[in-house]
Image 1 (cartoon, rainbow, N blue to C red):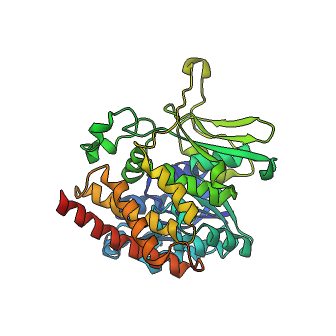
Image 2 (image 1 turned 30 degrees about the vertical axis):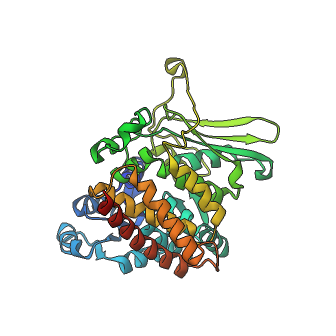
Image 3 (image 1 turned 135 degrees about the vertical axis):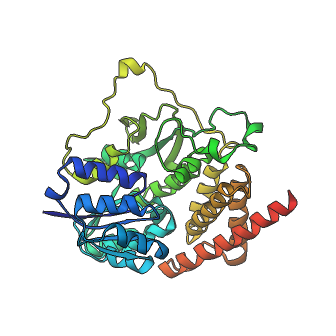
Length: 394
């Protein structure tokens, strides 16, 4: 029986993964090693019982009593905290979903790869902050990383049987988020509730806001470079409001291969779960005649400064990706808390990158996990200082 673990089980990707696992037989088809989640311990416990997991882990120590009570009498082990997440990742499994949001997903993913497992990677921050390290770790242990972001899964599928050396460009698409058609002068007054409503996808709050600011796409641009080893100048972004074409791959002969599908993350998750087979999935089948037309447009640099920052980060190299992601996460926290406005998030990130680059040279020095984590902590602290200065000025 195939052994599986799901990290970030109670998030949107984790819920979709759970749905597919249950549809494909649940505990009769899979031996679930570990499930991890955050503060929604009731849901985590329900999932653990349904899949008969060996262990359920909450990332928060103060949630342990509630998780222990919810799983009393089940025979399922419970644990909490960062060390418990690492211990869960060290439990051998054949297939692991890495869906913890943010830089917190980096360490569990690294530990999982050391068992030569297949890592279904939905945690884009791992590649943004430490892409070369992650790919080297996979190669060292004979592990496989399968992309779960819809765009990178689409590129991966389009490249089956193809030579990456013949790829001329990779185009990833973006819906444009909640504010794609807003007048620019209105963006400064955008609320958290408005930014949390995605026009096409059903996702968690943080990634939905990142979609509105295009920081999510900026991370995906860097992820494309790290995963496929393609030069930054060959990576393009198109705004595609319908969210039906997830990516296109252009080849040396001028051909473009596009991947189309309904905006449902179960497609990319199911592809990674069943790979190399294509098993039936409970996703909508497109009726192109009913859809009628697909539209594309270039992203407005003034509306989406995050994209420009992504290319600057790739030019810097080193630990710039770690600083970029950490500053982005801190700025997002500030926006959600009402401390800064929507447009100030990009300004915070740009200020952090400029200060850290001039002060210590983000592109210098050997890349290591210690350096990545140190840069992450410094960038978060500096972002808080920058946000405080912005509030004072305002």
